[in-house]
Length: 180
Image (cartoon, rainbow, N blue to C red; front, side, top):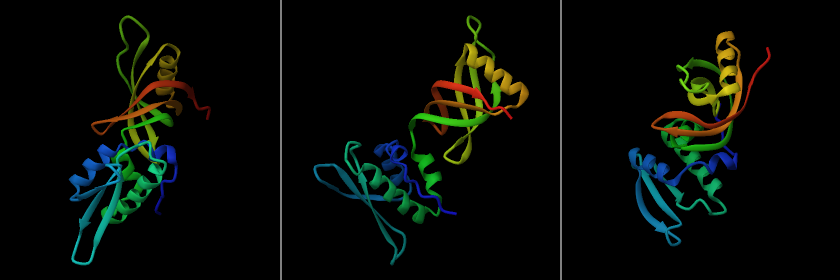
């Protein structure tokens, strides 16, 4: 089953610099710029008959930025024979106000001076289970310990950031344990 990403808020999280690095790493070549550097044209020749072209927007403030990113994901899905979700996860750097459901897999030793510590969730990120680290304090940290001990799923909202292929949930809030 092919999933098409249509959520403009998700598509706007893709940084053009990250996408440009992805294109370079996968054999694409920049062949030109358009509209005073508002975008760049990228080409990939796979065979004598198969050639692909991408118009990469270089400015987030363009009105059709999300639509251009959607077009790019469709083209890369065909060329790379991977799902748009997998490609999006590779190119995503941040997603504000992200809510995930998951299971607490690890609790780091709490801080000495206050009731806080790092936890690792196994949570859903765009329909795939991923390891997500976050720092919790006070009541949320106690809830995470309870969820860990009783193997209960939790929901948590925060700003999802991807650093070096690792997901971090910054500014966690609205942590709650699911009642089964």
